[in-house]
Image (cartoon, rainbow, N blue to C red):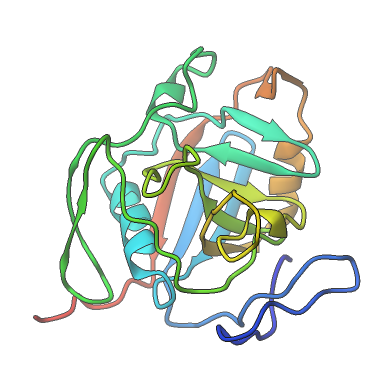
Length: 219
């Protein structure tokens, strides 16, 4: 489910018949994330070779256990599911959606270089790969300001190309992965009963497991 097929970084994504768009084909050497939440499991390819800083940040947070026990705090049908705020360990936290990871360093798994989270756990915007916010894509959340992404991301359940970093609009959200197994669960999550977009029945992330990791670069 979701995006497939090819698109060059030098040209805009091609349109699908349903109004969505296509991303580049999957890379079998990319890491795989298995999400195990209270509603079930799904898997996503993580685009390490396309957005190594963003992907390595996500992988580091997964491996540290950062995401365990956090709840989806904002889900909207025909739009997206947002996740990753540490304040949402309390599923009804009024400030859920405003938190991020601690400042610190992590390893860029593509280059072997040290990367940094700073100013509230934020990383630099990685606007390098023209992957669109199509159904099933994983995309970085931010405050609307440059370099304000950290641990929060969203899973698109609709074609949201207006959120692409290379779109003409003000919203700039780089894609760093694609659901490759059980996308239907992501759609179901977006359709649960909510109050102010927050699930009435909390949806808790038990774990996110990363497999197919590359050997660490020697530099």
